[in-house]
Length: 164
Image (cartoon, rainbow, N blue to C red; front, side, top):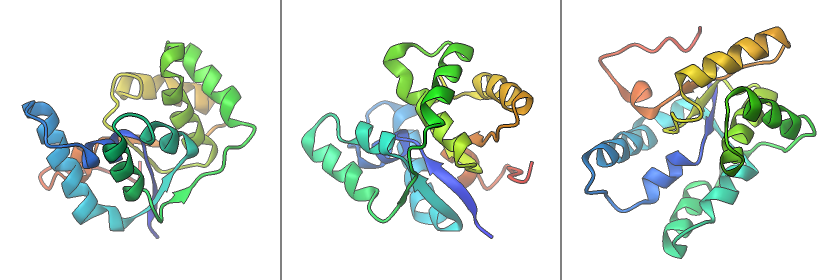
């Protein structure tokens, strides 16, 4: 059975953007492309209305490319549990109001029990934040996805145990 994988907005953003001259960003773009071509079919892919909201912003042509990438991907339903849970994560993880959408991504993944939250957003959804969220979720009987960056899924030299 395939694992469920939530595509946070950084994934279609890196795929749709022009190749960056910044070596770090260019590397992420290449790895994201490798995931998209070689790995994505191994998972059941999901997005949310929050991904659409973010993908519509910015340059019109790039936004169009981002939205085209999302065609045929299942959209998770916004449930009444998502917003209040996002508020809890904002407080617990010190996410500023201007980045509330990051808390919404995490909350919708938890509510819908996504196995993996795939993202390059390690500032608000990084290892330390996910440990705090995990502790809260365990205490409150909530599910926590694994937050993974695309390089961990495509790295052929490092095993990622997705059954943890």
